[in-house]
Structures are given as structure tokens and as C-alpha cells.
Amino acid sequence: MATTRHRIQHDLDWDCARHLIERAYTYYSERYPAYKLSLSWLDPRRAELRLHTRGKELLAQVVLFPGEVAVEMEVPLLFLPFAGRAHRSIDRAAQSWLSSQSPDRA
Image 1 (tube, helix red, strand yellow):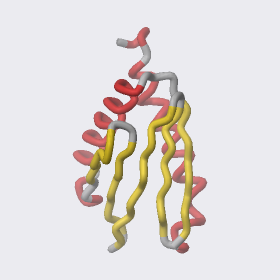
Image 2 (cartoon, helix red, strand yellow):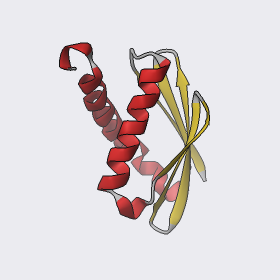
Image 3 (cartoon, one colour):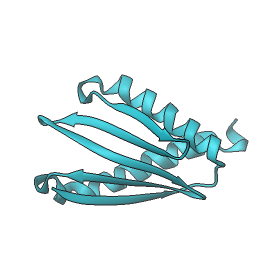
Image 4 (spheres, one colour):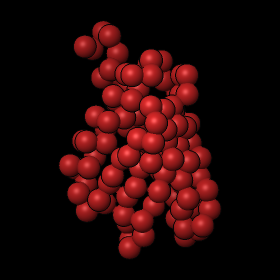
């Protein structure tokens, strides 16, 4: 296993950032039910995200910081070459979700 880390910049307050994570989780868990996504908040700023793929359960730690969300995940070494592609995909999705949250789009 190897650790992959990613940070997503935002300009939301704590509550809005958490709410946006929950909305995105709901959307993706309904869109991709085969991955059996689960999101558990450990405290107001830390969550665990679990998903299943290719017979493996993956666990991500999600931590809210002022101005960013940090995601850390243990992945099988076989998946590590795809981390860059996954990070770019996450960034595109995050920007889409963040732009839908901006005041001028509300």
C-alpha cells in the first residue's frame, strides 16, 4: 500500500465546505452505487470516506482546513500510477461543485 495526498483549495466557511462535501457524496453515491461509498464524520472537521473497487476497500481521510480540504488515501501500489489522473479528475469535479456554490450562481 502507498499513501496518496491531495489538497483542494476553496473559499468557503467550515459549514459550507462540509455541506458541499455531503452534497457531493450524496450525488456520487447515487451515481456510482457499485462503489458502495460511505461517509462518516469523526468530528466537525474530519471524515472518513470508504469505497470499494476491484475487490478492494479503500479508505480516505478527509480533513477541512481554512481555505482547503485535504484528502489522504492508502491505495494499493498497483493503483499508484493513476494517482495523477485521479487528482486531475477530482480537481475538475471540485471546481464544478465550488462554482455551483458561489454567490453569483445561487
